[in-house]
Structures are given as C-alpha cells and as structure tokens.
Amino acid sequence: MIEPATPLEDQLRKLCLVHMAGELEAVLTSAAKDNLAYRDVLARLVDIELAGRHENRVKRLIHEARFPSIKTLDAFDWSHPSRIPKALVLNAMKLDFVERKEHLIFVGPGGVGKTHLAQAIGFAACQREFKTLFTTAADMINHLVASQADHSLGRALKKFTVPRLLIIDELGYLPLDKQGRDLFFQVISKRAEAGSIILTTNKAFKDWGEVFLDNAVATAVAERLIEHGGLVKIEGSSYRVRKRRQRNDGLDGQSDAE
Image: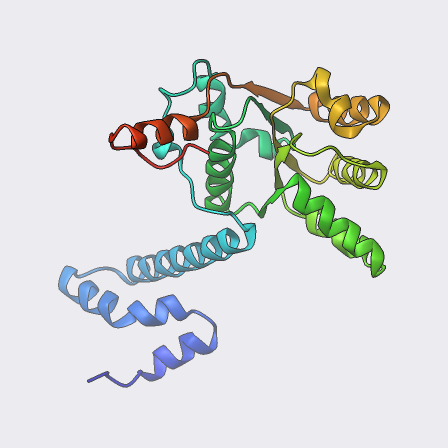
C-alpha cells in the first residue's frame, strides 16, 4: 500500500523539487538513525535533487541527439585499425575541444570505426550536459533543401547551429550539387562561433573537390574546419567485412565498430 504524501512532500513537489520529495522520508529516517545535523540533512536532499535533475537532463539530451545507436569508448575495438592516433581520441573524450568551440575531423575508409568514435564522443558530451545533434551529411542536406521549399530555411539552419556539438557523419559517400554544397557551407560558416563540429569522412582533404564538385567551396569548407580543428586519421580494412568473414567461417564476432 502506497503511503499518502506528507504536507512537506506536497510542498516540495509544488516547488518542483520532485526528487527531494521522493527521497524525503528515507533521508529523514537515515538522519535520525545517524544523528545528522540539519545542515547535513539539507545537503543530502539537495544532492539528491541535483543528481536527479542531471540524470533527467542527460536522458533528454541523448534522446534529442538522435544517435542511431548508443556507442561508448569501452566497446571500441582498438586492435582493428592498422593505425589510429589513440592518444588524440582519448584526449578528445575530455571534451576540451567543445569548450573551445573547436572541431574534430575523422578521416578514413569505411568500417574502421569513425562513426563509433564520433557517437562515443557525442554520448560523453550529453553526459556533460552539452546539447548535441547527430546527423549524416545526406540527411542534413535533404532537411535543409526541404526547408527551402516551404520557406523555413532560417528555422532549419538553427537546428544545426544551436547545438554545442554537431556530428556530421558520412561526408564523401555522395557528391553534393550546387544547392547542397551551398547549404553545407552555410552550416559550417554559421557554426564558426556557435560551437564544435565532429565530421567523419572517407575522403582525404585533397579529394574534397570530388565531393563538393567545386574546388573553391571544398577549400573554403576545409579551411574553416582545419583552422580551429584537429585531424584523426584512421587506417585499416573494414571491420564489418572482417566480422562477416568470421561469421562465414563460424567464428564468434562482436558488434560492428561503425
């Protein structure tokens, strides 16, 4: 049987101190047992409220980030890439580059773990209460093109410029037409002072002309990212192909790296 709320619990809920209200009786019981001072009781209740609010905010930020799946650094297979700057990745997990509004570019062939690492850093950013958004380059461009058709481009651009960390995945798999590259450039330019970008691409900078179909735009985008950014170059064969071969050979495998 659920005990009815006390008047104090009701007052705490009216003040939106719901976590404090939920743990009030347990804390008071423990305080009486341990003979805690009033200040210590209040400090414990405040800690509970702050922890509860943090947990709720993190859950909301993870939901709003639109990650295709939750990836963590612990689950990354460091042994798979033939070459990876591990120290640089571990340093990025500290999120100092987000504090400085800098960028991070992951470059490498498909299946070496670029997306996994980008999502892991994004997940860590949400836990630090940094507003984060994950998108593929194609989805972002399609969203912005559609917004031009219904005259809501300004609002659509805010979706990609407001977050402190924007993750743009899979640049380079499809070339961008004039409309697409102009919109991509707008996002990069508007984020110059707004926050950080993590970009994953299978194309080296020297080949971005093939992606943007315009060397001037490719150079302008690359310069804006590199000027305040770090490069994480990963080499190796596809993790997915390796796991598929292992399954075909009857060997156990873990989840895909990317």
